[in-house]
Amino acid sequence: IRSLFSVISFDIYDENEIESNCHLNHRSLLLLALLLGSDYDIQGVQGIGREYALKFLQLIPSTSDPIDYLRDVFSRNQPNNKYEQKIL
Image (cartoon, rainbow, N blue to C red; front, side, top):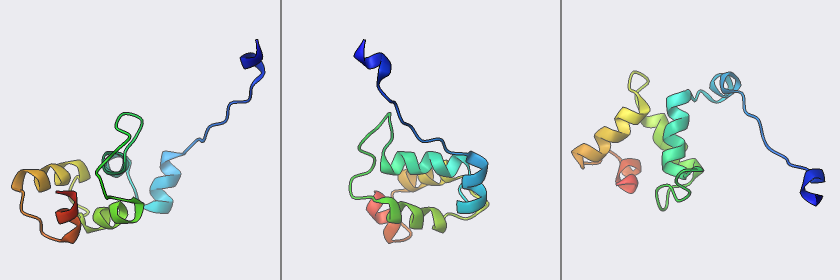
């Protein structure tokens, strides 16, 4: 019975607001979740923090899909910069 009266808190994020303020679209947010960890994979990529992940995202050409770009990084196994090197 006690749990019926407990307070549950949670955060609500607006995808449109994130995109306009942070310039992160849905696919960019998915890539961040892969790199940093999420409910489905709490570890993410070892040694990659929020700032590093955002810098990596900034290096992805705007014409490229972030998830496809990460897939290409893994498949070519030849880093083009220090951010790709750390992810590999």
